[in-house]
Length: 316
Image (cartoon, rainbow, N blue to C red; front, side):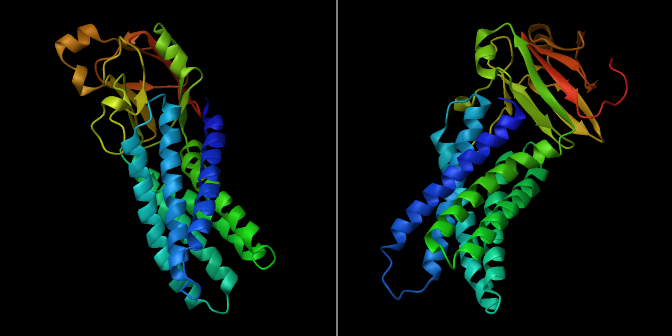
C-alpha cells in the first residue's frame, strides 16, 4: 500500500468511525429524559466521536504497518479520543452560548474545537517519530471539524437528522485524513520497500512506502508490535519481518534539511557489526550515512530505497 492509498483507507476508517458515533449517540440520547439540559448530549456525541475515531485510527495504523492488532493499543486510542471528545463537548456549549446571535458560527467553531482536540490527542501516538505530529493532528482535526460544522450548520434547519449524520462522517473522515495527510504533504522524501530475501517481508510489505520529513526519527527493525512493552506507540516504527534483521536494527532521521541512516545502538557492538548487515549504496554503515535521492539501503536481506522529493546533490 503506497502513501496515497493510505490516505484513502485512513479517511474511510474515520468516516466509518463517525457514522458509528452518530448511530451510537442517537440511541443513547433516547435515554435522556425530555426537558433535560442539552449539554449531556453534546458531551456524549463528542466523546463517542473521539472514541471511535481513536480506536479505528490505531487499528488501521497497525494493520497498515503489518502488525497484529493490539487490543490494548486500540483501547488506549479510544480512551484518549473519548477524553479529548469529552473536553471539547464541555467547551462546546459555553462557546455557542457566547455567540447567541451567531448560532451557525458558534456551531462551526464548536465542531472545529472538537476536531482539533481529538486530532491532537491522536497525534500523541506519533510523537516519538516527530513532535510536529501533534500539530498535524490538531490542524487535520480542525479542518475535519470545519467541514462537519459547515454541513451541520447549513443543513440542520432543513434536514436535522441527516445533516448531523453527514457532519459526523465528514468530521471523522476529515480528522483521520488530516492526521495522515499532513506528514505526506510536508514530506521531504519517501522510504520505499524494494525487495527482500525473506518471503515474509515480501508478503507483508509489498508496495509499502513511508513518508519522511524534517525532524522525523524512525526506528527500523524486526521487533513486532505484539512483543512491544509500550502502552500506545510502537518500539519499532518501521517493521521489517526479516529473520536477518535485528529487533532494532537502524534509525533513519532528518536533521537540518538532510537525511541519514545509522545503526541502532543495540547493534553497535563488535558482535552486532559482524552479524547484522546495514549497507547504503553497497557500503557498510558504521556511523551516520547521508541519504541522497535513490539511495539503496540494505538491512539484512531486505532492500529499501530513499527517494528524495527534491534531489539534493549527487548520489554517493
